[in-house]
Length: 548
Image (cartoon, rainbow, N blue to C red; front, side, top):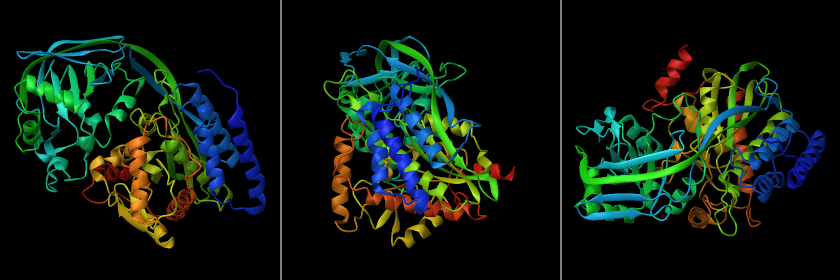
């Protein structure tokens, strides 16, 4: 990767950091504040940083900014004498506008790229082709033996094309006894479905997009699954994945099922019923496309403060620094600035680092980890989980920040995955000191717990908190916040319009950062080892990890 000089906004922001360093020497410990946080956000989300895509000039600027900020704060480099950890990535980009064709007794259906479908491959190959592959509807595409559910039972899909619904049967039925009811499980996630289809030997895997159970509209699918798609470098070069993976719109799916002599609504009903059996569609699927394949090293950025009494034990604060980058095919503004997602969390990470570095020496070590390629499937955190800079068994716990409050102080704190671990108790105590309460994620059906970087460490056993902004504004109430959040999701999430706005109120973000500091500090300065609660899917891993 080329080296880019520190320019414009970056130099000004770092100068500001230096000024604040001088100021705090006279008024230590450092007081996290809205102006400093705004400076980080506006710099990282500026057009100059180009949307912070891994492997782009924006990555170089972002990494330089984070390294300088961590060094200026007084953190030690966490990877030997380096603040960075190389994350080997492969970029695979579908080129042109590949068509999908479905043929059957009812004729032929052609699906247009981006309007009707998006298609890609995770194989490291320039040419991908699926020709006249038998299509099978496999319901939700789930194989969960511990739940007595297998959508692939009795059907061989090797070399075939599987068609699946998004989310899981629990959400579809709202039955709390089926999967997790309204709360999405990992089986409802798109990445699980594609991976399971590959394990079953499918040549191609297609998910039907449906806005409500997916938790995002087609615009998000279009922006997220076009352009370069990043993955971790694998020894088999991705040959274990299906030849082609895709999303299609619900409207085109209805046409496809009609061609098959099936009714899509009827299939929705069948798929959520225990004992569902896969349905051959008597259709043939074909597609072919070229891909550009490139390899690169992206980087996680990590600094730490060494503990005064138990330096080998570590608590981690994390946030992803990346966003989607720039789409040159978009007319007008094609820069996905990612101000809320996640310049806010990255800026918050820097503010927490400065707070810890100028306060009393922590008894345990504190790691500040800014990870790459979250938008491409939590890749930076997944790589860290496989190659940790501190042993995971010695990692006491952590807090992940993915989008901070931009509308002012709230009486509540949303916790995605509330009830999963004993870390809740520490957060609850810190929230009580702020006269606040913890509330569960009000949209558990969207599976947010599986959509951010804490999940990769959770899978490896480390108890992790994923707190989020509250909804009950201290002055303006719940309806005010709900309207703002709904507007962001509809108009700005994963859109070029996710930019910093002068009407943002960052006082709530700073209040949350103080909460995260107090939560972490109480654990860092203790001898406690909080665990996952009984019944969670991660507890057995943690128990085994701590036993060794």
